[in-house]
Amino acid sequence: MQHSKRNNTWSKWGIFLGVAVALGTLVVVGWTFMQNRFQPGSPLDADVTIGIGDMPQSLDIRSDSSAAAERLLIDNVYETLVTVDQDNKLQPGLATSWKTSDDGLTVTLTLQSGVTFSNGHTLDASDAVWSLQQNVTNKVADVDELGDLASVTNPNAATVVITLAKPNPTLLRALSGRLGIVYDSESSSADYQRKAIGSGPFIVADFQPGHSLKLARSDTYHGTKTVSQAIEFMQYSDADALSKALTDGSLDMAAPVSASTATGLNGKDGLTVKEGATTDKVLLAYNNGTDSLLSDEQARKAFRYQIDAAGIASAQPDAAGTLGGPISPLEPGYEDLTGLYPHDENQAGQMFSYFGAQYLTTVNLVVPEEYRSLAETIKQQIERQPRPMVNLEVLSDEDYAKRIKDGKWELTVMSMDGTDDAGIFADPDSMFHYDHTEAQQAYADARAATNDADYEARMKAYARLISEDAASDWLYTRKCFTVASTKVSGYPTSMINRRMPLAGLTVE
Image: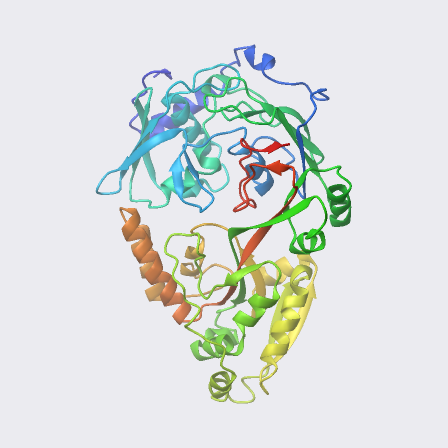
């Protein structure tokens, strides 16, 4: 069956994939793309220069799974079927609307009309179908988030119908990230590592991997044209060099920056420091494996009473607030669970006293260098009790990863920064080794939800269950920081560790 720009009625996934292979042999047409792309070394001056800490090695988000590739390209060069706002709420993207069937097995999306790629080719539903197909064929990062796809069809140029074998309440969320990018099916042979053919408000003017990325206004963009003609990202591996570039005017903006950099630049003439919310969660993780002290429910709960999470959060410059559970305020199913285990050393001491001296001896707190200071605070707090003692080990990233993988630890400090990532505690084979039948069933119930309201309610119940059982100790949510010249405006401040839409960015 031939691939059609106007009608594609694939109903079998096998056929769906078969066509993908055939499409892979198409030759790129439309030399108009070259007319819309600046060559490396372009003389186009940037209106705004932005310092960043990490740069993608490739422009192909499908193969470069780095956060940098998503953060810089999505919403700027590429558009997704669904997008999210600064509060992490789903919003229309290339799809102006969507409808989910009552059984949760069919999602129908209606696409915008009049959309073109930067090479002038028309974007329609067949491109969306092809792009989803490529995600599966090439096993793009996080492709499992699409769920059990039965078929994806485009009954007409403006409609995409996704059929599932079982409900996936986070499908639309998946379509707001790399899995929801719509590529040009007529340019399947393009070198996406060095080029970018998107439908967003910018095109790539120049790209030097690991060094710089310049974006220029797209004259073919279907929406409101960008305020700035060009924006350039420059990589700074050294925080001091980044701070100096901001203070001497070499940079107009830097985002996201570390809490220490933001603190050091706060109050500097001509600069503004802004904070924003994220879904990043910092936790004292427990190894619940059978060989660990934390396999005992009472021990887990005692540690939670002993740790002063509120005190820790108030002392951390990157903390947005105490957490208490596996879901952050910007995620579906959030509930304030900070009251479940208020800091109570007397209660902790009574619970620890149930354990014999031979059983409650020493626990291993294993962390990478970035969490040394926080781990030292946690060690001090635990050792206010006569037992247990804490063996703190600060390891290289390589040694740390091996220790965690081998399960030779009881406590560690780590972060989780995804939306809907709380489900990892329902997997007994995860690094936490948390095996709780009721929790697994509660999460399965949430995943079986057929609408947003049920999913949120069930995730809330699941989160409360595992927090009450003290599967870990969730300390605080992180905030992100942006430093910019007072002459710069129109930039986002929340979620910038995940995405950074800059269409409204301007400088006086």
